[in-house]
Length: 372
Ligand code: NAD
Ligand code: DAU
Image 1: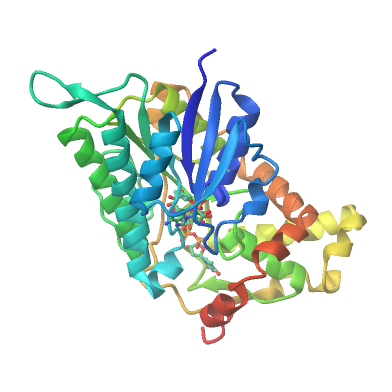
Image 2: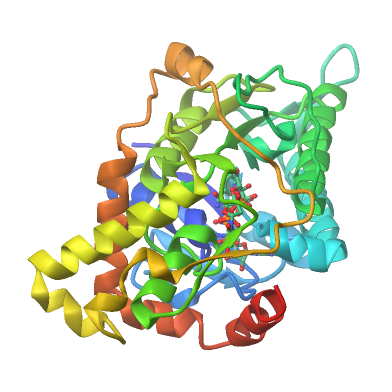
């Protein structure tokens, strides 16, 4: 069996850590090097048990660091790069756009530049670079590059790019650089654009884990605007499966949309989360020890409508037909099943929540919600 070495950036974050676990438990033919800067969103503890220094190595560092990334390529036989590393939170991008441009655009460019030089074998008759067989760069992108939908329609891979937040503009720029490298250098890259993920290890300042945390603490549940905005929720393991299919079977230079067929208004998500936690507490009383307040507070009274996000995209919805037709991938987890699995995970992993919120989380929370 031929073993391939993957460089997985952002592997200590939400989706990256789920991907690391998925790949290690389902494929014997890969070994991983995780490169992660451990920003507020990254947590070594999430992957500590996966890092065994044989099949999985961890390096703390920045994807923008040329010297470090070059050294990784010269000391390890890296054949695949999966770039999850990013500043990923739209609200934070509204506060501090520059960091998003640095990590999401320049970080992507740095990884690709070092990969293409390290993988180059020569030139073809037209002067284009040629590369070692089997090498691949994969960019993890987002449906937010397509902008905002009205009540009807879906994003396909040919929907024009129309980003509207500093975060989505930075991800779009990265996608364009990847496409440019595919054309100019015939660089062997693929891109996936995914809808909202949910599941274990989701940092609790994104909607679903924030709502779960606040319900358990008896805190208000901040719903932006009228709560009418729609997201297309995808269980994170379904996303990881899709990415691995694209890396193994996807066509170089192509974009693939990945979505959950699970459109929900934010207010529906919040109500369903309250109902599910209440039901679990009533039917499995052992869970009540996690509640920092009385069961009677687990109710819609916690919902509070707050000032809307600036430039808040109204609706996202993915058409994943290309993934189905070309790679035989469809989402397996319904929202109703996935949300119960997710809530159970949070109820059973409160120490993880405490660990990841012990840093600057409190400052962020105060800043974001106290005057809203
Ligand atoms: P996350 O914020 O949970 O994790 C990001 C990880 O990247 C963290 O571990 C962080 O420490 C690391 N990181 C940040 N800057 C870095 C840098 N300069 N160098 C090295 N590491 C750095 O993000 P996520 O939700 O897991 O998203 C992963 C990727 O998927 C991102 O590219 C994001 O744009 C994309 N995406 C996310 C979603 C979603 O719903 N979460 C949906 C579609 C696409
Ligand atoms: O669509 C894919 C994107 O999904 C990814 O590219 C991003 O990295 C990821 O963070 C996510 O972006 P969103 O902005 O959609 O996720 P978030 O969880 O921040 O918000 C989901 C919806 O809930 C959005 O409409 C804003 C709303 N919201 C969010 C928070 C944090 C609230 O109403 N209240 C909140 O407190």
